[in-house]
Image (cartoon, rainbow, N blue to C red; front, side):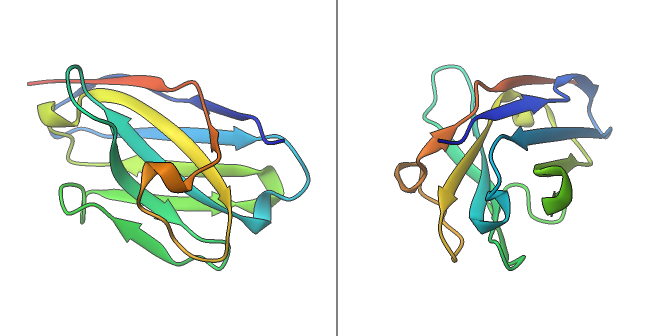
Length: 123
């Protein structure tokens, strides 16, 4: 069982930056592919980015070049650095995990989810 806890959400300004963190319980964090998803009001949950155990990454086109995912296995933590924020980045951001060696972009591929953290970007 893996428990995920997100932090770092809040209010940001357009053009500004925020960093989200997701800390996982358990001793096998390094074996998991970690992903970030987001869900805006009235919309479906969508893929943002993911990182495999080996460090391979994938990004949604909407965040490519602005967001960066990274992981610190010693701290059981994955980060999402969000730069050049836009109002359309406003959503609840979720951290997710799956025991895998490859990157996954589909929500259904992930077994474990955090509770989510709200990110609001003002114009």
